Length: 93
Image (cartoon, rainbow, N blue to C red; front, side, top):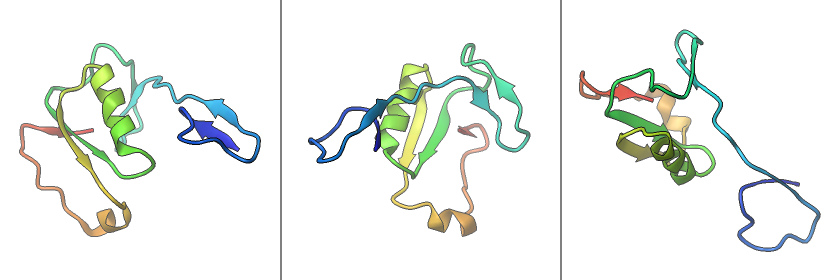
C-alpha cells in the first residue's frame, strides 16, 4: 500500500510512504503552467478542495504564500451542476 503522509495508525500490511510536493501551478482552462514563485495570480483567492484531505491542500496553499478563503467540499459529485458565485475581484484556485 502507498501512504501519503504520516500513518494515523499502524497497518497490518506492508506500506511505502510518499509525499506530495508541489511542482508548479497549472491554469485548468488553458493547461498553461507557471512556476510556484512568484504567484501567477492576484490574492486573495478561493481554494476549493473535495478529494482526499482538503485541509492538507489548504495547508500547502498557505505554505506557498496563498491567501484567501478555503472551502472544503464533502463530495465533488454536486460540483457538476453547481455555479460558483464568487466576487468578481477574487479568483478560484
